[in-house]
Image 1 (cartoon, one colour):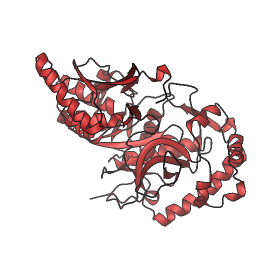
Image 2 (cartoon, rainbow, N blue to C red; image 1 turned 180 degrees about the horizontal axis):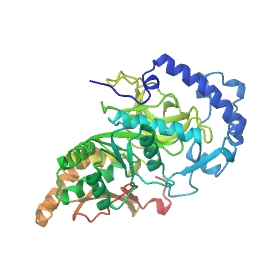
Image 3 (cartoon, helix red, strand yellow; image 1 turned 30 degrees about the vertical axis):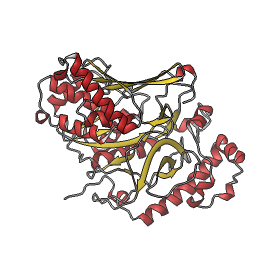
Image 4 (spheres, helix red, strand yellow; image 1 turned 90 degrees about the horizontal axis):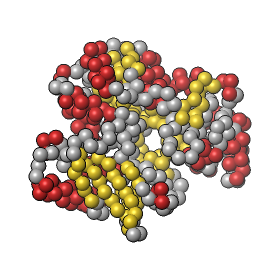
Length: 439
């Protein structure tokens, strides 16, 4: 099997060379941040760390973590590590509370980011002969700009569709023969659903691959999307704070995402103690940007729970892999004392033959948590009798209890009654947060 790489020298270098490059870049980056970011110097002083304590990347565990709270506190320019005149763009997180996190980019930052995204497209089978339809949002969100830039770097025909207007998306997809689709997995599922409603079969489109990220999704959802669109679905990972999509990407093996280790150094920590865990341990992912100029973050806590592994990959890439995030250490729900991840709920639904259109509603009544899951019925089931629907609800409730260890109230609702998302799906409504309850 022919193996394709965008930057083969980097993507297939030896582990020893990876470590050497990471060490050289880290020492240079640490000095850059220390010299130019007062907020970070103050943080080091607060934690009793001196500049001379850091002699190699092996000393990184001596450094304090950065969190989203730090970035909000330093808003807008407190973490900027270069003159503003050197910056050519900003992006921002989609957070809903407090100050937004604003990340700055020099032209060199953008070039490296687009290289990372081009690597991801090639890993999904992309070439300059492909038509790449980018349905991630543009603007402050990084998704559209990242994959758009990567597609340009590769030389593919790029359709900058952004999100929304699904009928137009499908018209362009069919008329222009799009071969690679880039969007959130929930929107990919919606496009597949709409294509079916319009009378199309999976083989009617020319798509061969999809690059999906920006929200959690399960293996069950992957198989559902692959079937509905007739494609191979690839995962991609990133965060605005580090550079957006392209920090890590999936190859043809689909067994985890290769982290671009020549640009990012990854650690796994115990989310409670901060202790660095060995390879193969499940914990919170921490990233250090090795060559970002404008907004370099050292030991940034992503809050994503995953596992790192350097097992040999059949694709030939030597970069370490991160498994699909299993949830987040900060948005994990604690319901009646039980830890619950939305991805667990989605897995049960898809295993039981339901479409991934659902909503979780958590509230607190009389000092007791309520836990409701609204699930859309399939169109062919909507004509069932109330007795049959109740029976199905109980069956689904039993499967949920087996997975979660807690009994939710299941409500099967009419098809299309849960609002569709053309961006990030709103899966959880936790009314306890509005009540000021610590969850």
